[in-house]
Image 1 (cartoon, rainbow, N blue to C red):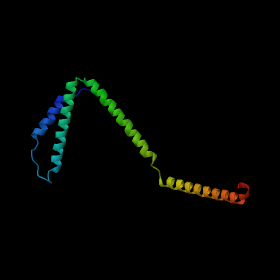
Image 2 (image 1 turned 90 degrees about the horizontal axis):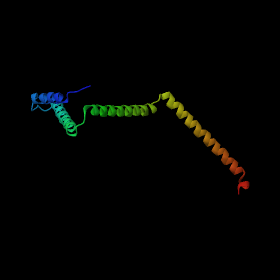
Image 3 (image 1 turned 60 degrees about the horizontal axis):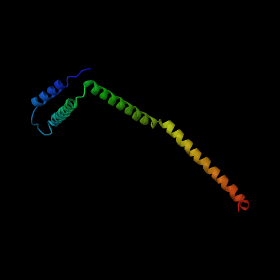
Image 4 (image 1 turned 60 degrees about the vertical axis):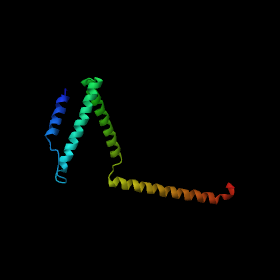
Length: 127
């Protein structure tokens, strides 16, 4: 896949030159924001092209870098999705687990009381 980066930047710069230079506040805020975004896009794209030309990076190396970055992003998104799904549960499941934990607490309290009774009954053997 081959992109004509210089052509892309020229098209965006022409679009910027053809655009308005002033906007009516409140009524044309969206258009002003679009122009600002286009200016930032052209600025970053130009910096990118200068970096490529200066360091003599071949286009294939750039595409390999982009592919590697996209792969890392996809892996990160999968991990984030995995973590968000892990904590998702139906209300029925949450209630069941709450009841199980409360039952465990009751069982442990009963066993503690039973153990304390055994200790009190055999105080003479302990001391």
